[in-house]
Length: 226
Image (cartoon, rainbow, N blue to C red):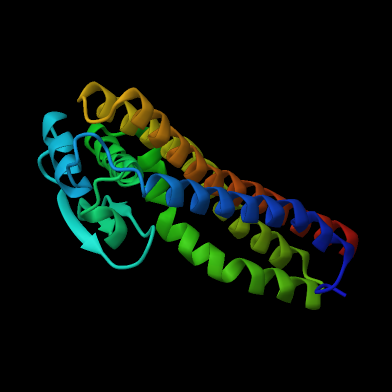
């Protein structure tokens, strides 16, 4: 009965929110990837200059395959831009690249939530792979300590999702500020950047909501089995 019980209904809001968030991201990216900026400079060039102007000259800009696969790796300080962003001068490309530059600035300035997220990554990776098997085994053998361990390990994933929210919101705020203060975008283009980054932020909100609902589901299943 574990696999098909009423608690699955708890996951529906998270699923719907996630689908809506993905649609928002694709829509915003599609719209603003077709809008070139007035300056017409590629994102890879702009982001490198943004970092230098803000005192960060230790980040390497690299191209990565895929669409919307842009990310900053704090371990080796590499800012990876996807194929559709790297050489593009669109509003969407500049916003996405500047967002990753925001993460690089967080690392440079020792932004606490980013440090916390980086610190818990190894533990979260282990916990996410073990939490469900341990939880299920605990239910099968009716051994509550094992169920509790499974829930605690899954809670680490929830913590990671929650800590990610301020990290992403702050990076977007930094992106808009750096682009605007540097004169890289007009007011209209800045509004477009905000829309793209706001849509992207929804995916992290959806992930956090889904994690919280999943944790609630595990707690309810454990209670019912008691």
